[in-house]
Length: 234
Ligand SMILES: C[S@@+](CC[C@H](N)C(=O)[O-])C[C@H]1O[C@@H](n2cnc3c(N)ncnc32)[C@H](O)[C@@H]1O
Image 1 (spheres, rainbow, N blue to C red):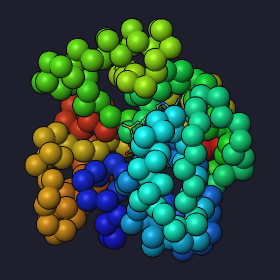
Image 2 (image 1 turned 90 degrees about the vertical axis):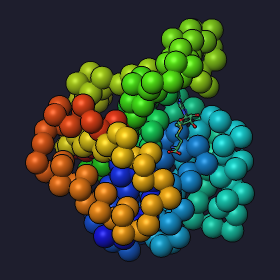
Image 3 (image 1 turned 180 degrees about the vertical axis):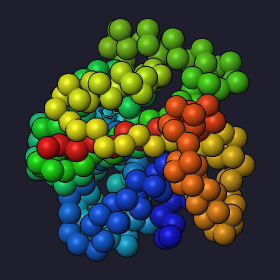
Image 4 (image 1 turned 120 degrees about the vertical axis):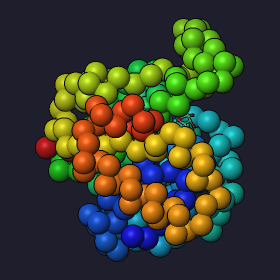
């Protein structure tokens, strides 16, 4: 297994899936809520046939990403709201990393994913639950505060727990076929693995994959705080 990103088993799994599906061939990725796209670096460096377009409305993160990807012509980071986007069409894959919990209007977001994807294309929509299970009181308090701010139009800090079943039914209503639900990032192992050796990271990732084969997403939800919904436009 080639390691593309060392601190997040969910993102590594998505990137490995893309490599398995496309190998070194050319394809187009639309990444919504891309931030600075920092988890993509190794993948995009080793897959230069891929055209990656990211969208976010956080201009500071975008600027950081543009500096980091300076000189890589296959990477474009754009300013845009994923709930209303209509500029990218017929992409092969749509991704969202650690992003759905920050999206205010999820049906509108899913509509963007659906209209951007080509027929037969896949979406990997990932979301985390750490903010909502944290022991840090300040972080927990920010959840209702961020939801209140969104009512007044400030969407930047927004966060709301994503209910797996509800999000899946919203996706199916948008026209998607459900493919899979995967659970990653065992708490507190994810934090413990910061700065770990490549051998340790590899063992962690392999363990996470075995757990996904042995247990249901509902069972894993108790210990794994990151979820990826895989969808296909049929
Ligand atoms: C936790 S960050 C993750 C960033 C990046 N995907 C990563 O994994 O490092 C979530 C991002 O989603 C972005 N976001 C949330 N709602 C969005 C929307 N409607 N349109 C564009 N970006 C959005 C936020 O601005 C933020 O940069």
